[in-house]
Figure 1: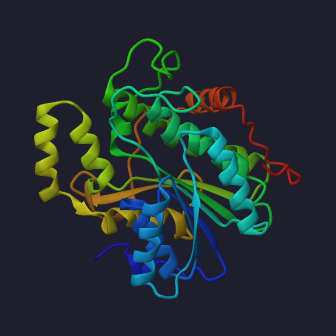
Figure 2 (figure 1 turned 60 degrees about the horizontal axis):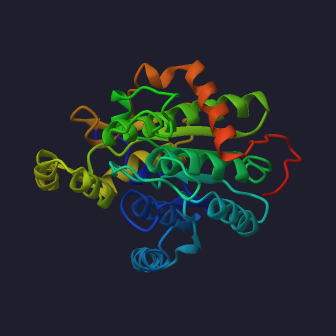
Length: 315
């Protein structure tokens, strides 16, 4: 039994999808799978030139791909707001799929344009604000899905609400794990609130296991630890390609049996590699209390209040 694979992706003609961080790695591979299945894919990228290169590569592999490129810097809430308005215009009132994939990993202490710790600000707050501002076109006219990409690192994290912005200290991998835990808590709270509002919006999560991507290799190199730098060299030989890791994301995005809170990752090697299957979430990732607290903190920090009403204003 080979498990779920690219042949299981349903026909996506007539669907519009947004993939953040689509210029490389998991995002680029995800965009290619969706485009091959017939979806119109909007590639949301921080670097325009790399986005153009990715779009060209995707078209080379899928000549009939329907693609568009738009700028998005998740570390700048003004850029998020502009991107949401642009997506809303391009979607023409209906967005079927949002893949919150872009992220940073294991950075030295840095801050976003708005003064947030970079990993939490980019990986969670930027995606929270983007999703919130796209609610007018997500599930308003037809069923829609939001997939947020987490990581195995979430299992070793706990939410420290007194230190979301490195107020009381900063540890590189602790901050990264917290941002990935936030991705799963956000996913669950989004699904719950959409259900309560009667919105046809499904929120799912995924992780790519140990995949060979620029993000993972750069994170290990920039960690500042000699042992992790050596690990970066070793992982090149033991990780699966981005095209394999992206299948977990694509399953979360397209499997018709996936409901709110579904979470997928590779099924082999302690979820490190292999075909996508239901993945294990940590005890902390199942905390309803923390999910609600994170939602409230995200509204306060970003100044963006998600509105699930049918007449939600456009961003």
